[in-house]
Image (tube, rainbow over all chains, first blue to last red; front, side, top):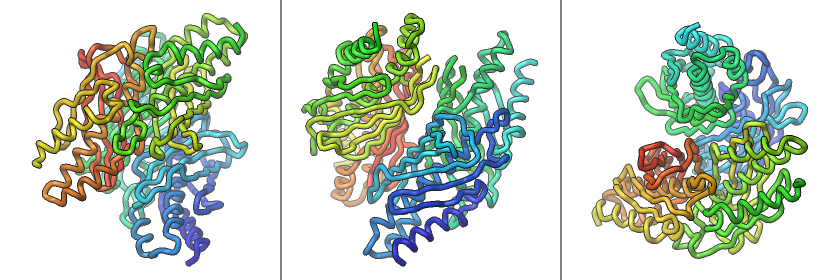
Length: 151
Length: 151
Length: 151
Length: 151
């Protein structure tokens, strides 16, 4: 498989094979070795604040963590180019979130939400990924900083 | 209403009126002015790692954030004892998560999960709450530190 | 005093009146209502890793927290424009760091270091500030996210 | 060397050979494979808030990060018992802070400060350490959560 096929497979895996990502309706958009875009729509069951109808903070952290995991995995694929594919698969099987900080900057208000993410650090053992959640009016709602084990 | 009634109402509100808490099936257990216990069960749609069947990190952060919000709100009720109830209600309406750090210490493996939480700081404007998620074998899976606006 | 004078006074205060900022030799450079630049030089006593001569992580977090505090304070001055100066002074006296996350991305290697910072959130009660530390070759060494009480 | 000698060497290294730890006057007290105590005294140059004479937040984060690094290193020594000492030394040479969160809970007021720390996670690649800073009256001033690379 070439890189484009691998990235396509990665996107489809996060979209279809992780049950809780499906609960949120996450869809993986543009995806490269160093950047990802994830989309999802407001729905009544994603609400936390029932008075105002804002997104639950847990929906936000779930979407940021999912986007961060995709970026961390894409980074491993990038490092593995031209190397033993089995070693890359073994590394990918071990990927996990070590810690995540979410800054909730503004209310989760909107109809369609977009998460973008990119690497701040892409090491052999640890990756650090920054993610952002915006609504359809490009209002920045939350920022995530996640540390992932990748080796 | 006395404090017991207020705490009962608080627990019921988090359990029944926040749609995304219902998606996870969160149930509020013991609740005092300074501590909360929240329960939920493993279900197929709460999985993140489909190979091993572990909880999605987003489920974990959602449960920790919900427990933290309950502790922050209980703290406001505690401070409001004997004071103007309208002011307390106005403060509660403004409560929100400012930031949350989650440390994912071990895989989210288990059948029944319990989150406990208590205040590290309970100020007039800001509360900081520490939360822990364990499974039915008392294995510590994740720790949360959340900062909440409460004034 | 006009805004330029207030900002100048703010910079001088952080540079000269906070003893531990002087221990590091922090110098406040460009400073506006929404951005700050802080400089300092490598010195033998700022080292943590004595084998390689890298900056101590505590020097990095000190510089990021100082820059964050300046941005938080400048935000209060900005909000206070045309309002009661005494109220602004009372708010400034209460400013303090609630929490700080530092991501140490690369070794603290260099001769001259520059911290830049700007607001992610500038509320009436809470400000969230993002800061970055680079060396003289523009290598990004660390990123900070700080939450400050400002009300 | 047996474990007691190794831990003694570890404590002396952090106390005497890391220049910026000496700037703060950090002294390593009790140290085991899973816990550390670090002491330091208030001094005029460690102040951040010059009005009230409280510790600078950077002093606090420096002390928490130093204690966290000691715990991470002690954990590697613990894992290396009975194994190749050269491999342990190679791992120790690579130890570094990945990220650190500090919660500043109360003003840094006091004459003598004590930091305690212990592992939340002690893996082959990553350690997570929780630390606490108290003053001589046992008032909890700050809590740290640090992630360290250890493999």
